[in-house]
Each structure stands twice: as structure tokens, then as C-alpha cells.
Image 1 (cartoon, rainbow, N blue to C red):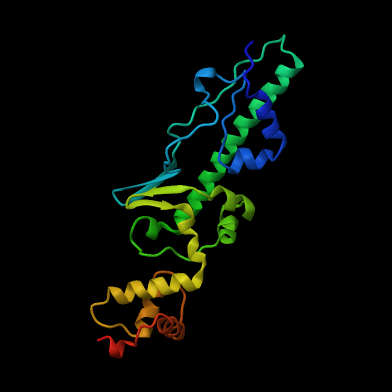
Image 2: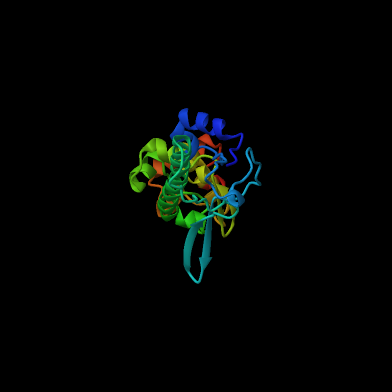
Length: 232
């Protein structure tokens, strides 16, 4: 039986930082004698940047799916009765890798589902800004630990009906001050008649940003924007 020269590297990788390497960091597909050879990608591999999550909108409804295009459907050959201890060990390692990749996909799907549900208006182009949402809040919604959500959303891309965005872009709105300032600028830049701070506060509340008239005035002044009386 042919043993690939990557076996020892694979074992080394699995011994040091197993979960991080397999579940939530850029996956390294590792050759193994028991993986179907035509399905194993060479190591290391450079792949073009593609979106991890794709959102589709049709007839008033939307759905999403995880982009598995280009990923191999890994499976194991049956292990013969005469397998040696080393072969059994490698077989178990390969099974662990496949299980880890499958689990990672399940987590990404669950987190993406909750993230898109919250940010539906922004993802579909209805709202100019995402709602405030922190990793901690998303973790509670999806039922995973905060560190898991942080890793699974790192360096992920989402293809929406209106373009490609970073998944973290849907979470960056947790920085409330920046979000409010951007929202105020967006409203003022698109106003036909100058809005008062009270009207701007009402618009922001309709977008899900709970904010008072005084807070609008505070951030408007920080942006160097005069009151509506001087913008008319």
C-alpha cells in the first residue's frame, strides 16, 4: 500500500491544535492512504477566493446555502480485516477529520442562519445599515460559545443579491457610535428637506437603532453638521 509523504505532517498537525486547525481555521486537506485518491486535493493548495455563504432572493422570499463548490466529498474506503495498528490509527485520524469538517459546516450553517435572520433588511438591500449585533449576541442566538462564533465568522464572505460582503461586516455594527454616525450621515445626505433631530431619531428607531433626540444631536455635532435650521 502506498503511504503518502504527508502522513507524518498530518499527524503532527492533528497533535497540535486539533480543533482550531480542523474546525475554524483555514482547512488543510491532508492526504491519507484511506481517503479516495481522486477526491483528495494536493497539499498545500491555493484556491480562488469565493463566498462561503450565498443568499438568494426570489418572489419576496429569500434563502441561503453554504457554498460547497470545489470542496471534495471526502469518504473512507472500508478498512480490511488484515489492517495493521498503524493503518487503523490513520483510518481513525481520517474519520476524525471528516467528522470535524462536517461539524464545522453545521456550525457555519446555524450561525449564518441566525445572522441573516437578524440582518435580513441589510442583506436584501432594504436598509443601508446593519442592526447592532455583537458576537456575544450572535453566540446566544445560535447556541454556541462566543469563541466558536468568533472563529467561524472570521474571514468568511457572503454573496448577497446586491453584492459581496464580509461576514464580519454584519457584526461590525456592534460598534454603536460608528453605526449611529453612519446612519445619521446616510439620512442627512438623502434628505430632500432638512430633518430635525427628532425626525432623524424616529427614522433610526424604525431601522432598529433605539436612540433619543439628544443622542442624535450629540453625534450630529461630533460630525460637524449644523442643525436643520441651517441646512434648509
